[in-house]
Length: 434
Image (tube, rainbow, N blue to C red):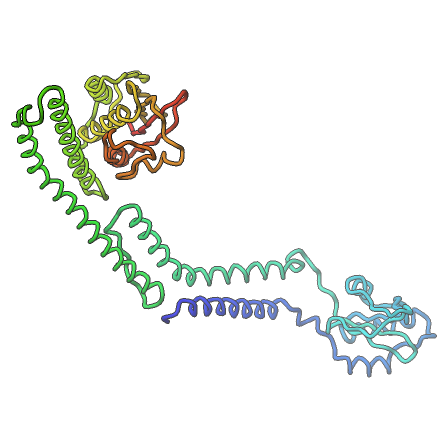
């Protein structure tokens, strides 16, 4: 069937039909066949002929009713016009207590509309004749039989409907997992196409979309990697050409030196940009770049980078913390954080290392700059994002923090930005320790 809503609709109808069938079967099995007494026509005819007269002694009336009870095998009683028991043979009082007697406004008995096995027949003199099969013993099982039957029916319907519902929803769950995997960066996620209904067509559409996305992303990565690689050659030639220029060609005196330094700085920034773009394109995507995992001495790494950048280092953890990861990438992570603090923070960056729980290490780089607004503390880790009011002269192209996040996530960690007490920002990187 090609329409999913029809399948769900038919599943509901089948469940209702099964419920009705089981309810009817249960009622048929639980009803008391032996409690259906004689037909009203027979009782009326017998009552008119053998009912004891109203002026007969009570014992005489009881003997007649006892004979009747022995003959027919059911309980009988004579009631007054008000419904009071005059004489009975059997357990008629219990029947009245259980089912009650209907009366009109004058207190007189009204025609009976009770169970078919309980007969209430009017007599010519205003009395009433009650007849019923004997009431069986009502134990807990019989008393709660219907409740148990309904629970059993509900369980049967639930068990019967589960395979149908599960079959309809299993493919939706598979599609949901594939969509989630694609959203997390697994571009190879695909769905097995089953059926020709709406879910099957949706799976086919998802696969085509995933193929196109993978093709576009792969082409984009290849373009970035190739462009970055090809730009290195003309950039190296440009650097050599500037170095071969004399100061006189750029002007004499301090002005010429300043121009030469500015050109050298711009070339360094361009070289760094190319390197970061190339590294970002290699890190982007699941498994895009294989890491060289090895034990990394975090203290030694931080000490080297802080010494090179003249940053303060504060070690708050005993022992020698070790991280299993790629030393080149971890060094790039720390270097980018320190350079970001130098560029935007103002003053000397402060780097600290501490334990965060039993299995995590926290690397924090603090500065005393203007800080990052709360609304931008997540966006600053996006590629090429610049904070509002950032100056072009400060350098940087918005890839440094994006690389920090990529490297931290590739090592099973995370990075965040928080406000520092007294002004400034703190960039914290959480990494699992070995």
